[in-house]
Length: 311
Image 1 (cartoon, rainbow, N blue to C red):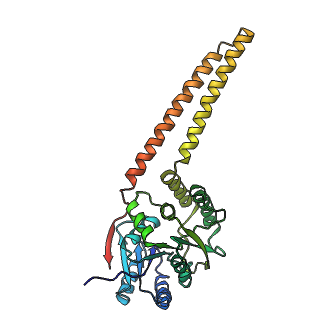
Image 2 (tube, rainbow, N blue to C red):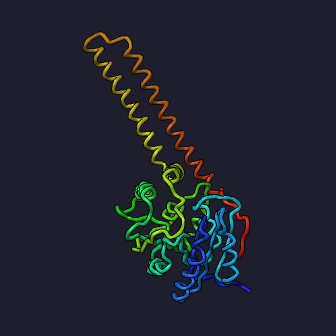
């Protein structure tokens, strides 16, 4: 018997959230049932060290037809967990949200409505962010990078609370990648996107797993794997060094012709500067080629392995 695909899939990465899971799933069921659309909830346990997986198995027994649960073999990070959830989701609209109840399930219909209106990607814009100061600072840094990379409007908010059209998710899954960054991958394949105002609630249980170090690591991942502009910046410095060497060489020649004498070290400085500029420029060009090769290789690799799956 052919299984009918749900209209909505909600993908949630799970990590250290044993206190919030039952309430989260209960509220989601209530909200999604009221929408009058078929749905499923896909929860991916990122090898959480607490009792999250045991609670997920109990919830699966309670909601066997609407829950899919998976546990990764090892901790692979939030973005890999979401990518795993994408591969398991069958809905025509896929919603992603956090597991800590800071993304209210009652706001999901707003994101779904935006996709129904024709958008490829709807991202929740928090009216008031309830994150800690460190996470807000890291988030602003990463958001600024993404806005620059994808030419997004100033003030466009980027959050993990979003709804995506099926076709975009399929292309993201085909894209793969050893260092996935979900927001960048979605914007690479979404042509119509919108911010949707949503509430952001204070954290009720535990503390955030994000810190400044993790934000810096995510920023480095974003820059190195989804943009070549740092290499172009290096190439610009190389060209500037080469231009300086050429300009200084012209200055030395003019001085020699007009004054007849030039300091003994001037010719050496010109030669060293010129050839250093040439070498650096060649290295920058090689770096661009290596970047292209890296992008092709990492597209075909995944960094997560499913250890246990209950569909």
